[in-house]
Length: 103
Image (cartoon, rainbow, N blue to C red; front, side, top):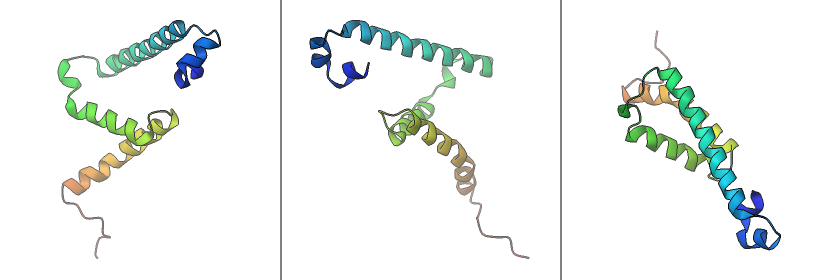
């Protein structure tokens, strides 16, 4: 798969069936997305179109861009950082201060 990703013409000249490799990658990623959707549906218990709005899609795109498009661990770390920073952002949006309480 890496050879087809890096240089398709070279992979074809080495005898790799690039169409089959691309079809396998598409099938594998579609299956993983399907499993993720099933797990999410089980977690939420009800699926409606309003669950996935623009803000959720924007968060996912930002996480992937920050983490790096060609890596696996980068988006995972970016998602972890994004999830852990949500309470801080909510507190600062509500006007809470981070100074120590005075006695």
